[in-house]
Length: 102
Image 1 (cartoon, one colour):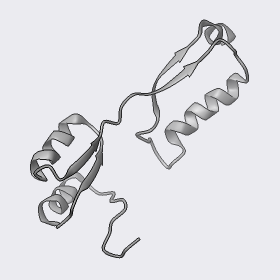
Image 2 (spheres, one colour):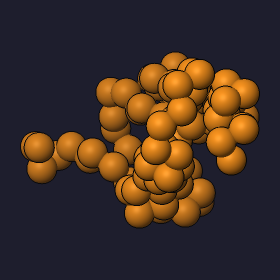
Image 3 (cartoon, one colour):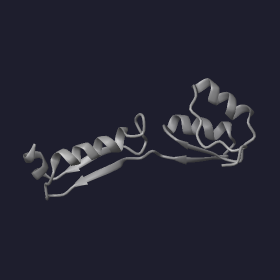
Image 4 (cartoon, one colour):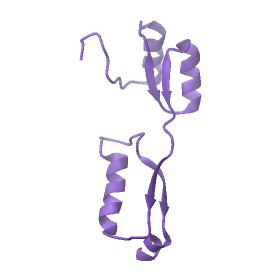
């Protein structure tokens, strides 16, 4: 990574607002709410790539196996990276066999 590039910036809203207002950047990559994305699109005059942080689904078919492992994997998908992740599943579609299995 070039010393003039930022890969990830974790900060308060006001600090990020300052960076957006004062930094010279080519493009901003954003994942988050549509409200904030719209705000940033105006502030950056379109120099933004927006990921919708959409609905990451899990679909569990009729073959039930290792319920504890599936539950653990779902938890890891959501929280394994030192906090909630945008790639965490938003919804699980489970065949009735999973419901019956408990």
